[in-house]
Structure formats: C-alpha cells, structure tokens
Length: 224
Image (cartoon, rainbow, N blue to C red; front, side):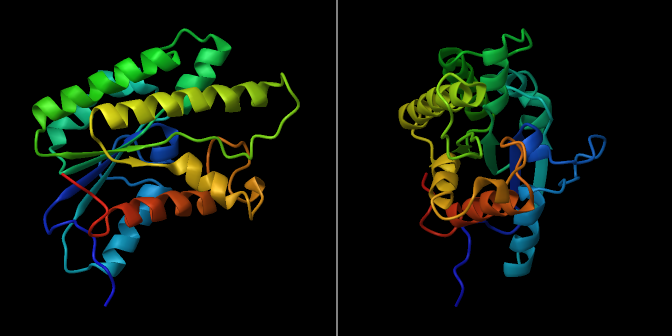
C-alpha cells in the first residue's frame, strides 16, 4: 500500500514566495496554481489521494523578498486560514543586496530578523498552522572563476541559507533543504538540465521541488 501524506480531508495547503512559487499563476485569481511545483504537487496529490478534498493555494508574487512577504502576510496568508504554509524566499534578497537595489532587499542578518518576524506574525494569528521553511537555491554547482558575479552570488547565498537554518533551529520549525537536494542531484546531472538562468527552475527543476514537498508530507516526516 502506498504511503499517505499527513494531510487530512478539508485542509488547506498554502505556498508563499516569489516568482519561483508563482510560476505564471494568474494574479487576479487566488485559486490559480501557476505552472510550477505548486501545480505539480496539487496534481500528484489528487492522483494519489483522491479521497481527500485538499485546497492548495499559490500565493507567490514575482520579485518578492522576505520583507514583501512580511508586508502582505495578513492579506495573502492569514485571511485564508491555511493548515500548512510552505515558505520559499531569499534569492531576490541576495541579488538585490549584491546589486544595491533599494527595494525591500535585506542583508543576511536583516533577512533572518525579518523572516523571524514573519513567522511570529503567522504563529500569533494562526497558532494551529504548521509552517514549513524551504531553502532558497541557485541552480549551479558553484564552480566559477574567483571574483566573478556568479561566484560572489553563490557564496553570499550560503550566508542566507545559514541564517535560515538558524531561524529553523531557534523557532523549532521544519526545513526542506532544497539547495542541498539540488547540489546532490548536480553530482550526477548537469545543472543546465534544470534551469537556464540558474534562478528559475524549468519543469524538471519544479518537479524536484514538488517531490521534496511531497516527501515531507508523508506520515512521519512532519512534527508538531
């Protein structure tokens, strides 16, 4: 018998993030799942567990940083009263911080502080909701000439990931290690197979994320 997820009939799973999460979702339709890992996850869940009526929501918006997520958390998460919230955010913070773009970007330290504040808000208004963090990633093996833009970006990203690990540990929240997952895959397959620009996954990359989410929700993978 196939393993079942811990999801229960009638529950809501919400994915919160930037363009990686949004992936061409219709912004005027909050039920739109887009064309990426959220849609892949929802379709696989329906195929595997058709007896459960699970509402899946995609609340990703392109270009968002962690401060954007904090700003809109009441309208786009709390009001929808989800049972599970998966948060994937960070790559725009890294890029904008590197490029010194003054548009709600955050240093690694500010990223951690703002991320923690976001979680505190969600926990205050949604005390029964399970919050799952997801590592930001850069879809490359990280081998570059020293001093190049991509080398600096890849190195800086690790600082953000480290801060997220601290948030996960300090707030006792589960963390899906997407960056680590992709790096393992890149030991066997070229990164070009999963993304052209190294930031936005193609359908193969989105399948990896959807699978990671699904694996997390198998019974025994989550905790209170």
